[in-house]
Image 1 (cartoon, rainbow, N blue to C red):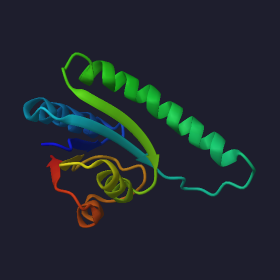
Image 2 (image 1 turned 60 degrees about the horizontal axis):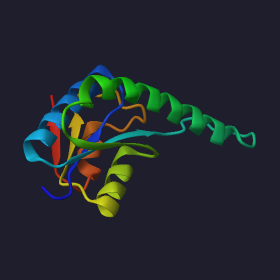
Image 3 (image 1 turned 180 degrees about the vertical axis):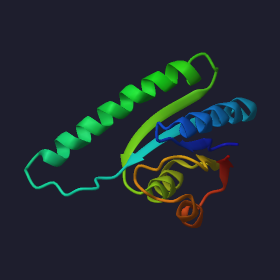
Length: 135
């Protein structure tokens, strides 16, 4: 393992389990973990600055939610990790990350509530790196 593990979360209960798996795999393989939260703008915004403000709000909420997960599941585990928040379809963001930073595989949950409405089947078809699907 040279490139590390990429893990998708959406802050659902299922994604908490996915993160537990990813942490365990990271510990066992001695690699790094990148935790990725993606979102999409699902409604049009017309006013100047409205998109920027909405993006800021979503990313602030994601950071607050991640902080709770971090203290519960990551602190003191002896692993190197990072958290990223990005706008877009999950598969696009995963493939972009793999191209730019590398990733040995992706850890994703079978039951995660995808906020950006991309199904697991679509993700499996579109992602260009190996997947570990957590039941």
